[in-house]
Amino acid sequence: MVGRQLSETAAVPDEGWSAVAQFDISKTPQHGRQSLLGQIFSPGPLANKSNTVSAALRPRWRALAAASLGNALEWYDFVIYGYLATTISRLFFPSKSELESLLIALATFGITFFIRPLGGILLGAFADRHGRKAAFMATIGLMMLGTAMIAVVPTYAAIGPLAPIAIVVARLVQGISAGGGFGSATAFLAEQDPRWRGFFASWQFASQGLTTVIAAAAGAVLTGMLSTEQIEAGGWRIPFMFGLLIGPVAYYLGRHADETAEFQALRDRRSPFLEALSDAKMRMAVSLGTVVLCTVLTYTTLFMPGYAVRQLGLPQAGSFLATLLSGAIQIVVVPIIGAISDRCGRWPIMVGASCAALALSYPLFVWLAAVPTLSTLLAVQGVMGIVGAIYLGPLAALMSEIFPTRMRTTGLAISYSVCVAIFGGFAPFINAWLISVTSSNVAPSFYLTVAAAISLAALVTQRRLNL
Image (cartoon, rainbow, N blue to C red):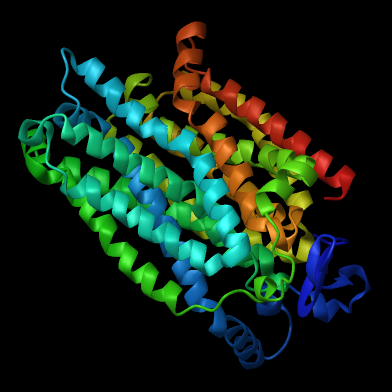
């Protein structure tokens, strides 16, 4: 953010909020504070610009690829379980009615939201004491373990009550991994280069867009190529097996990536969790508030396929296409906006996006309810996807800059996982409840509007307190 202090990587003792030397960006020469995007598009010989960017990125590509793939793995396994909840409910949670089975399966989906804060505390504190890389590798291992358990565990018909118990344990393992994964991966990315923090950190959310595309494509291919009987006979395991293929690649790249310079310069490694509770309550609250719009937008996107089929009467294939569009927009737009934020600042971009979400949510849903066609759904998802991507671009970097290096992962992990548990975990229920109470297909816009207002208030507080 222009006017904020950024951290160089020269090591000095950790005094107060930083473990690295400080300089005031407003006093540096213009060429010294160009963003990655600025260097690419600035005047000058193309060869020189290409060499500059290539030299800057070369030492960090493994970290970028590993964190993006690892994060994609976590979110892929999380989302694909939700897509296959109906099938899993019949195979692992048999009961007197299909509705009861589905509710139990959805409960195992939701349990990961509530175990996430524990994962954030444990793995966040581990990362702030032993390194971002070590914690990141641990989250990949845990997610692969949970996914492998789901992929191979026999059904209720084969082993009885042990089957649902195994699914619950697997989901708990995945929840702990997801709770710590955001903080460790975001800190790992954000600390690659303080000058380009927005660009590197933005891949946290760009990789989530990749997850949306892969998971939606997997769901569409699976339902399009296999019959219901084939899916229940074992076809449902294919997407989980595919997810396991991503893990070893991310693990290999992570093993060969370097620990961040900011963490290596850190001298003071006291208990970050206790410090977060005692000295950084406002920072935690502000960080949590900025995530509200992010998580409600994300889970509204995941809610839209079912909403399109149930409330609007659109075909399932079309709803998957709309989800794919949102994911594709996120992959492309988020890194570009992240890079722009390195030059123009995080705050103006995010305030503009949150105001757009506040103003557009209701009119978009009114239009969609009045004209429930596939083209309208695609247009609405496209606009929401662009607004969301603009907001997400600088978000990870802004959250990273709210917290000092010595407690950054802990602060990121706890604020994000608690916000997702509250606002994301209940999002499908709240949207369904609002539709039921109001008897209106416009009701999901109410939740989005409230989320935009909360995040806007958090951004204003962040600027006033200069966090």
